[in-house]
Length: 231
Image (cartoon, rainbow, N blue to C red; front, side):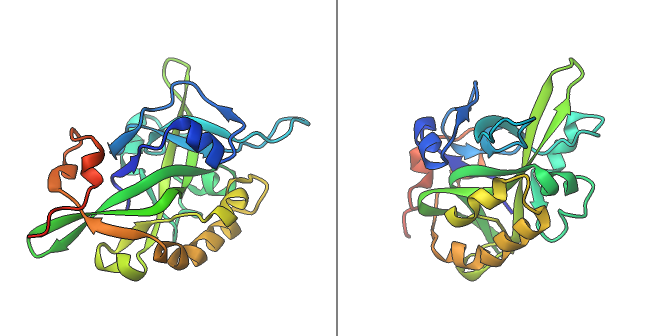
């Protein structure tokens, strides 16, 4: 799963890395401890209207997908992750799989390994910012404004990550990012391609244990991703 992650890379660097055409207002500040239901940056490429060219945008979204038909924003509290095996058929996610796919930039994420009653947090990361496979939705709020929200897709863990947790976020390789964002691409086929490539993508990642302070959402700072002292 993905329940907490890190994005400290500055916005200008994200704009360059993900070839952003337009960056939205009020993008979140860098954070070393991002929990669900907070605002996070996502990359989207909506279907253009009329003859307008496609535009890739960096937007602020609430982490926890709220579909258009939801009665209340609290629906998103149980939809911060979407299982890749069932997302295309679940009412919560199927429309987004079809044509509202996003990239969720991250420097890495935290996962906890359980051994008996002991839980050890690990930080999993690459040499550069990565991109989770995400979905997005628009929901009309009671005041008439629109809320953009997102969910991160997960799959069965592969390789070294299988020893940490049974689930992992789907990381989209640079080669598949364009197809994943393109709303004219077949959504189920795009998802299958990302899932098929996942074992090779995660094989390139590194991991190390970190301080248990990451368990508190109040904790912040680059020291959270530093390797924990060995006993």
